[in-house]
Image 1 (cartoon, rainbow, N blue to C red):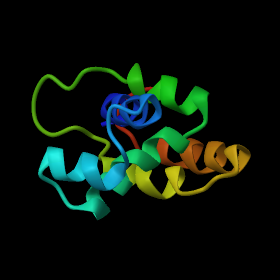
Image 2 (image 1 turned 180 degrees about the horizontal axis):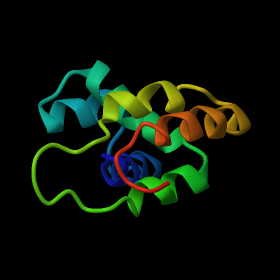
Image 3 (image 1 turned 135 degrees about the horizontal axis):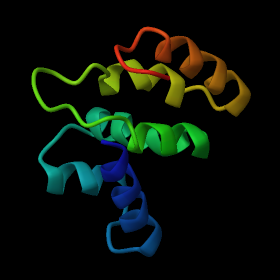
Length: 96
């Protein structure tokens, strides 16, 4: 999801896509869902890196969901994001 957010952001930034509404239309999703995806780009760079390098899920469901990250991404203060992320990591089933 985070990689998708980066890709979408670059499409808008480059002018290839006009705005998030157009992205949502092409992706056949609601503009609300596109906004949720784009919020991922607001995450502090170190949090983004940690998410991108989380252990691969080989069976069952991913232990962390986009909905778990959404409140962090909606927080614009990176120091607050880091505190929330640290708390969330404590609940994950792999080493933090």
